[in-house]
Length: 192
Image 1 (tube, helix red, strand yellow):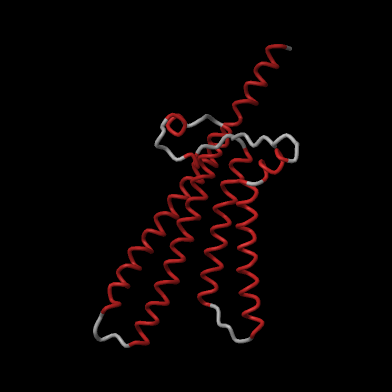
Image 2 (cartoon, helix red, strand yellow):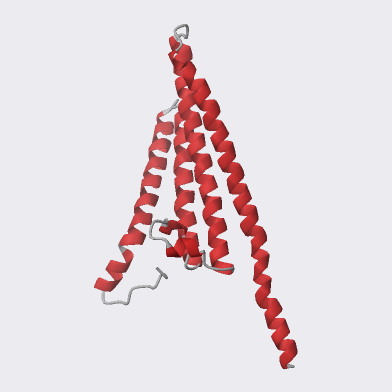
């Protein structure tokens, strides 16, 4: 029974390597999004070169300006989404396979890519996803036509909710541990 148990537990433990499909797939998806966003930047820059054309009317220049700002926001959104895929890929690898030695050994490497536990991964992904939502709201606000006073109220409410989400995110990172300690409770362990 000991040999069967040892073989079964070995196979069970090594089954974690199936996560490599998700790691490689997420990494490839991130690279694809980085590529698409970079191509968008190249085309955006080539169109923006025409902004100073002497024959361009004021209306055409305004349309080019508005279009360029909208496309810049889309590019930022694309890069943020690619960043989510990169963080997700590296985080899955660190959680299930092995620590990335270069990330832990180098003092110059970014600590955002060091994932210690599932909560670290969720926290980092949540921050980037919140930024994507903010950029998407900004993009929609650029294209929004305010035809009634209620539209203005909706826009203001959405901005207020985003500000509240940012405040709560910041407060949960910096204030929770201090408040709990000062209240006489033990601070929650986050694995940092």
